[in-house]
Length: 433
Image (cartoon, rainbow, N blue to C red; front, side, top):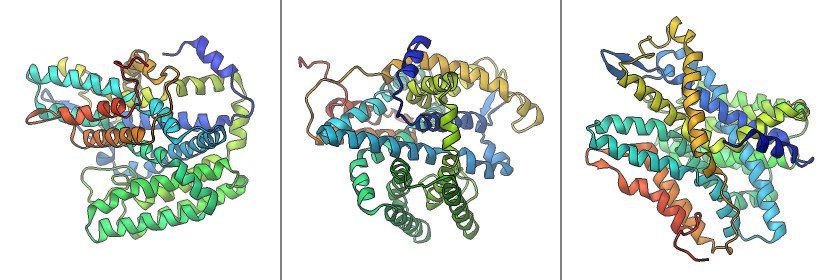
């Protein structure tokens, strides 16, 4: 993990014109995701067997809480702000699209490689020693879920130069059109039963939420009152969509529902993004003033320095804790989920999983800080090839896991690795240049 001295140096070197609220909201959104995943894991050991469960499936009263805990819209709004600054800077400097995209991918994608390597080796060893492939499949699906959202973000970041151009030309109309297209895809995929159409909403929904980041960057959100009005409008649309159906209340996916709001993303998440963005950004002024203090800002810098590693490894840490508990006879997992004792022991659960997560961040955080890339600008097709291979591999892994009855899904596991090398994101170790 980055040392306290390095964190202090990074914090002190912050440019005075930097919008610190961007970094704070990025850290906040990821931390909410992490703790939300840990909280929703309602796992119990009965008669020596691990019985998986989800708090949302057990306690329906928790479904409205997802309107606050499903904070991926905030992450994409922050991404729009950051990508807008980055691409405009690249345009001013004459940086090519290929160089710009390769640099973005190095920070986003390289931390995934050690995660896949660990799961590949661990999965192979597990199968050799008699681990049931279905258990391995389930465990890997749980652990690799974060890569699915990473793949979606990589796609949106890849097309950021085009979407920024649209924003600069058409402004708020791009968000309105995105909402109409998202609704249309919902009608086709849900109403007409053509399921593949729904997956286009990874572009229409998350891309439109990403546009809100451009609006924030360009000062088009107005003051606090206008932002609260935007939030109220987003909330009203979300309530109307859920009330009219067929959208469920829960803003995260559940296995036993025909229609989920998040897989694939629905128009409800775009409306939710308006609600959440308007609400949190209404308090941007006080937040920025608070972040002028040394300790809060250093905490934000510390989280952001390891943010991708934290995001990618926090569920693997949970799987490790569950596996150790199962080997030890289910210690700590004999409490019935959602019972009073279960709630009282959640702090202990958070501490244990948190310690394992921090350990993994210490071990693998360095992959989030690649060395300066001095290579010549690549042709655009190379990083684009990396995007295709990485996103295809991560999407398939999140959907089907790393194993099936035939053993490890070696080709799928290899796709992201092949992508980062063939696409030039990682330097070729055999290259002499």
